[in-house]
Length: 208
Image (spheres, rainbow, N blue to C red):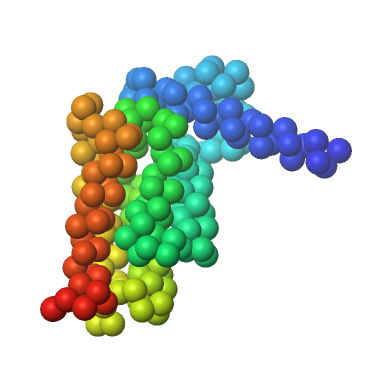
């Protein structure tokens, strides 16, 4: 019985998140009400509030779901990074963005805009970014320990530079309809290749 209740709880939560994601993308965050989400998910409004007290909590759940999936995929790359250090960083960042490709970009435009207006959401978005930077820094530290990177590389600063490339193209995709997910991946890889060249220079015997 307990197992059935838990399965029902997970199913309802998933229905709420799917409904909210679709409505935020189509109507916008501000124009979507909890009543709208209830109707879309075919649940009572009171049931929605049993799971989420307000719309910001729903956004946090969406961010956590997809953000955690991406970061966990990145952690798998960290466990077994490709031998080529450039390919290793490219693989990690590509794995991180994959879960977000399943949603229309308009959803992420709405969530980003909502985060700019809500301090709690801004904090959550920033925390996710810090986790990503930490993951990239850990990979650079591992690659440096393998002897693949410059011995004087500051992995924290290096990770921030790589994150800047990631963030720039992520925002470009949100705001430019001409940039699809494949273009995002290609440009991300090109940017990483360019940045990593400087990290590899001494390891390859070049001058600083």
